[in-house]
Length: 64
Image (cartoon, rainbow, N blue to C red; front, side, top):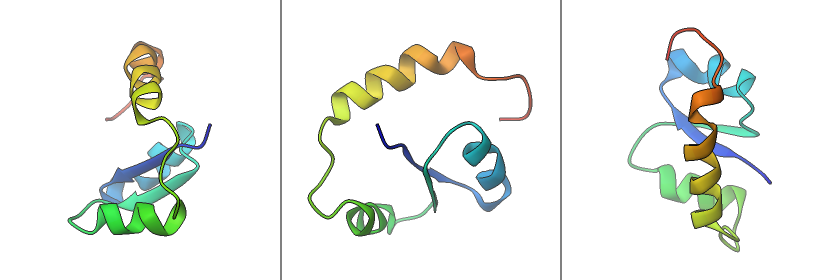
């Protein structure tokens, strides 16, 4: 699985440490930036979302 996340500049390091493979800047051009990373589109966004929801409780303590 490949994790692509968007985040504020101040949180980029944290999101990368939490396991995101690609960290993109938050903004209105996010869909285009994702298309640049995976031109053929995601395989299973529902499955990925389900994993994210399941793992929320496992985040390490610290600023969010």
